[in-house]
Amino acid sequence: MNTLPKIESTERRPSPRLQLIARDGSDGAERIDPKTAHISAVGLEKNYYKGSIKIPVLRGVDLAVREGEFLAIIGSSGSGKSTLLHLLGTLDQPDKGEVMLHGQRIDDLPARKRDGLRNSQLGLIFQFYHLLPEMSAFENVLSPRMISDGVWKYWSRRREHEAEAKRLLEIVGLGHRLKHKPRELSGGEMQRAAIARALINGPRILLADEPTGNLDRTTGQEILNILRGLNEREKLTTVMVTHDLAIAEQADRIVRLVEGRVET
Image (tube, rainbow, N blue to C red; front, top):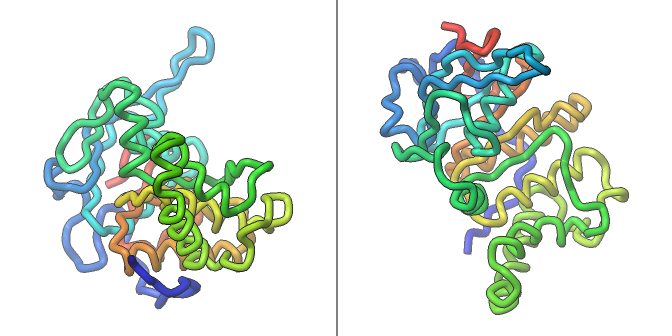
């Protein structure tokens, strides 16, 4: 079993160049073959409707993320960055284009298979923590495992799952708050619990939608340190949406969305 220490801080890296340039100086996403990327989007278009009025949100987005990369997507409100993340996480489907995982298309899978994919390979965290208020931090972390396994399978491996939940809560700095319910936790502590919950099923990709957006600067940096540490130590591919350039600059690479398009 992995016995990683609690992650509290990581080395501050030099700021990456914007617009598809990686830290190592190589070309960015537009030069990565979507078929060999860990997760990728090709020609994504997404529209919403207000009555009969069509509102374009994504207007042909191409994006590819290397395995083990920490990618930040930035853009102003309404630029389409959260919509893009939701499409990558199969929470929604594009009107046009494709989402691929290891070169295999996933956006057109039946709903049940997409649900299974999110449970096993994609971890998602959001600006609002979505913790179940009646459950403790420990129980919240275990809840995806309970859902994915079903009653009998879960109980047959209950001790193993509980040990993993405790390990993850220790990693994010909540080992002393296992029994506390969300109302007894600070915003930063709730986000730490949400991160542990996103990791309980062992995903290799973490999708984070404004994970520091509801937090003060200091607490937000602590959360980013945890995400950065998980990326570095467990080689967890991470795609993070943020409006905060100071947060984005600590990623390996930054992509900027402007009016539903990748700025080049």
